Length: 293
Image 1 (spheres, rainbow, N blue to C red):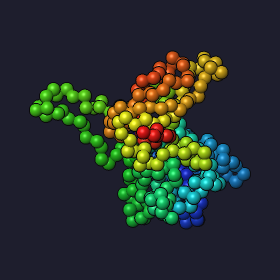
Image 2 (image 1 turned 45 degrees about the horizontal axis):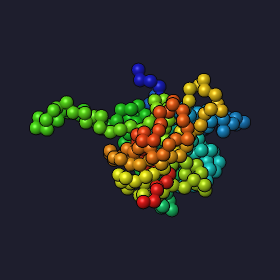
Image 3 (image 1 turned 30 degrees about the vertical axis):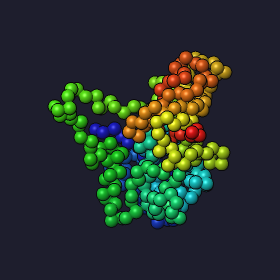
Image 4 (image 1 turned 180 degrees about the vertical axis):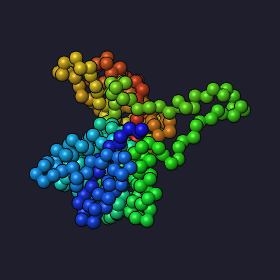
């Protein structure tokens, strides 16, 4: 029997019809073996909506964000319950929680960020969304949603075969060609998302335009944000949460930039194994500043 999946639904109370549609979607999920956290049946009169959000949103295997222009407007200015949930979601994205956990479901409006009827909140821009605007396509999109929740995609990646004989040694390491991002549990440091920090603190934290961040080249020097982890036995006064440092791009592999650390860390803890010249792998979202050439 498959493991029980749990889903939290984040939505705005646009209208009674919209609330009914969300409830119907939740009922269909429950009918297909998914445990759904929904305020309409989980919160009673006199109980705390805030406590419900604090407890149930992080617990869900997935968070469905029902996107409408009204939802985006409230999420952007952190208004009401939607605004509170937006803070929780943004913080968890910043903490490097797996992105596929947060699923935008487009119910009305448009995908374009600059459109007056845009429905996707800033922290989910550029994320593949389920389009459930057309009720005639509901069954197809609902199956896509179920497949995502249960991890059974309709189109699976084929197994990588062996290269043809004319390319030489058939024991290729093509599977391992792409680098990976550092992680707190392995390297004891990781990079923070500049995009998320900008969304959390738009008035004080600014980053380069997306086109600049994506079109970097070998030799460019950029600044990224490091976050550190420490063993439990370390004295709290000896810990440094993180720092911002320059890195120089030496290679580009797929979506990843491979760089070397271009300054000496202030933090000298051997635990992190970071020093001038250390390899740092990053994505465009991690760039917070680009050095003038």
